[in-house]
Image (cartoon, rainbow, N blue to C red):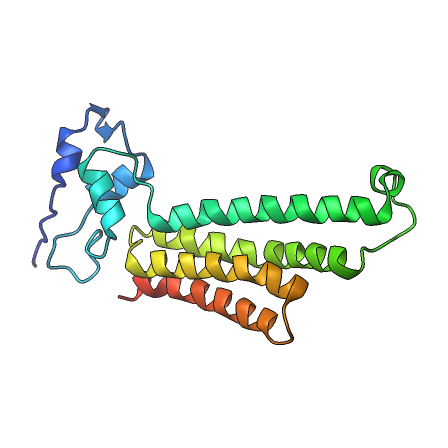
Length: 191
């Protein structure tokens, strides 16, 4: 029977502890403290992007590149909602927007396109968040998750003008590219 030794992270040794757990990391600190030996194929941290490594060594918060892409996508959703709301208000009128909306109306033209683009983002956004969460919960967020998250974000940014103004075929290409970005995020799970 072989017993594998667990490597101790020097950054965690320097962190003050409370009842055996580090103060500065929560779930991340627990995952890192249970880090497998470097010879193990799925060792946590072997595939970390440079932004993560530099943040850890500098004692900063562990905000990875894919989490920044997630924040950017949240900002995109807020921006799309704002634009869609303003255009809907202008087209359908303040009385209908502020009222009970008993009679159904739908925005049309450019306003309708922005509304539908926002709805489409809301449909695909949970998949993106779940993918980022899974790689972080597994403790394997690395290069593939960063690349996939930024591909998703860029494709969704291009999706909005492609939906509103683009020629036929550009919008579906942006949608497929965003889906590919989600698949790339899972690349760190199978490395």
